[in-house]
Amino acid sequence: MLPDPVSHPDWKIAQEAEKKMKSIFQLAEESGIKRDEIIPFGNYVGKIDYSKIYERIKENPDGKYIVVTAITPTPFGEGKSTTTIGIVQGLAKKGKKVSCAIRQPSAGPLMNVKGTAAGGGLSQCIPRTEFSLGFTGDINAIMNAHNLAMVALTSRILHESNYSDEILAKKGLRRLDIDLKSIQMGWVIDFCAQALRKIVIGLGSKKDGIPMESRFDIATSSEVMAILSLIKDVKELRERIGKIIVAHSRNGMPITTEDLEVAGAMAALVLPAVNPNLIQTIEGQPVFVHAAPFANIAIGQSSIIADKIGLKLFDYHITESGFGADIGFEKFWNIKCRQSGLKPDAAIVVATLRALKYHGADKSAPKIITGKALPNEYFLKNYKWLEKGMENLFHHIEIVKKAGIIPIVCINKFQQDSSEEVDFVKRLCEEKGIWVSISEHWLKGGEGALDLAEKVIEACKIKSKFKFLYDLELPHISRIELIARMIYGADSVEFSPVALDKLNKINSKSEFSDFSVCIAKTHLSLSDNPSLRGVPKGWQLYVRDVLIFNGAKLIVPVAGEISLMPGTASNPNFRNIDIDLETFKVKGI
Image 1: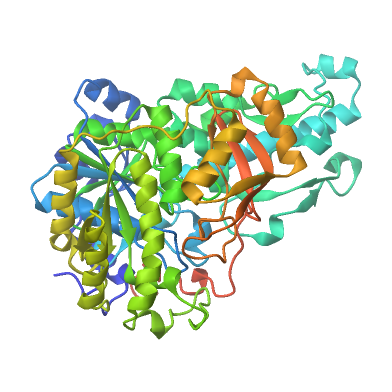
Image 2: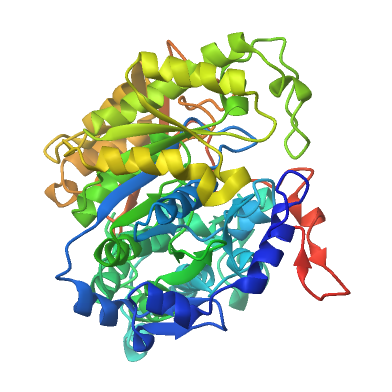
């Protein structure tokens, strides 16, 4: 019997569940994975040898494909990961063969405010500590590969400044004539560190480098991570890494990792991370873990590779996309599905009473302080706030409908939620003909998700009418404007002169026509202003810059004040994490 989630923290529930975990070989065998296709990392974590297993299963028919998304996020979370685990447990209780793919948590939010992405209550994946703290090293591999490109760039700049063309030629190098003002990449680290957003490097003596401005972004926003999310095999990994643009020459020519002769070494560092990871829910179902979060500043999707394995091995495969439907689902829909060729059968849109109240709250609502307990007003009955907040939920439902698939609202019910308010939300959805389920997986595990599981099964019986939001013939400026109006609800888009100049150059080159748009903007609002809740009206999306992820085949407009390096809050989670000196286990995650 697991501890009661009402009175016990998630990490204590996980530690109790871990006492009865299946071994990685038992879990693999039950999942249809052969012993020589699993690479163990201890007794309970493993990597799947992708090239070996996919060659064996590639002719299997695909199972049903379900994506989990949510309403606009709030400072206290909506429970997408918890729901992803919960629906797997619920479908398993219904006798279905089911798996899911989630993203590896970044140390940034883990040590900051958001915490781990292991789920919660009785719908978690385990082993929780290993999953949360570094896992099998995938993010480190991405980080090292990315930073190696910067090492190659900065050392090349130094050598070109010190040596003539003749000496460079003797060393087997050609002059790239790198423009220090056109360096696209920065360094990455897997923490939220606002002090590293703008830095100066190369200080010291002549041998220490050339002084220049630089920056750190968070590791999961790296183009290398986007490539890992989108590739289908090792050959594609190597090809795409070689196309990453690091800087430009003084005559405007792109300088790639291939030009720096570092692409091969980068691919070698990433190679082990190509194999997806395998762990389990606390009820023993398989969970694939691959790629990373941050759909606001990155693609934020579980990988194509993990989904392809899940669909070939299981009758139902659930995949998680980051944040709300405006950014996470939109990128799943128009980027991941386009590059994978996979089409979803249904979508789950997660909402909670407290999140709906947050989006519907008026000026009388108490201020929410990040890292502090949620004010009691969000737990009291307030139908006015709820009804107003429903506008945000309905907006996200319409986004999913535009993709031609059935959205199922999951009211992620918590112990303190009143049944009357939950029924009120359910009734408002049903009045609009929206599929809706009240799910108590946080409190009851799979037993609490049986109705949600039944809704998913029924929705998957209806053939989807999946379609993309835009055709690739549409100019990128028009694609951005379409996403802003049709998905975010903006009136129009304003482009900075820098952004407009870059987009005009992009649109003039046919080589970029099949690149998808991956907008970086705040996740806390449908708009580019994080303080605007609900469904903002009468606003304009401001695109201040545009990045080209040449290897990932993405055009990345940067909207509003979003930063690729989040900051650490005044009350971060690392204050709560420690080692229990009696059990020598980690506590507080």
